[in-house]
Length: 68
Image (cartoon, rainbow, N blue to C red; front, side, top):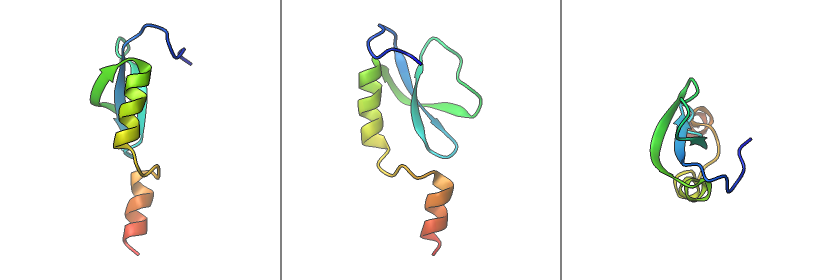
């Protein structure tokens, strides 16, 4: 959707399932997403997501798995 080196500033965002993404800082957030801290180039945001998001399963799946 957005080019890797497009000169934009991006933000790290997260949804209620604790899934992360990058979003252009100058655009309104889509419904269900919140700022998760961190902004910069797309590469900077993706690097931050790599450190924050170690378990790619949605929160609801992780919680079900831990109940067993």
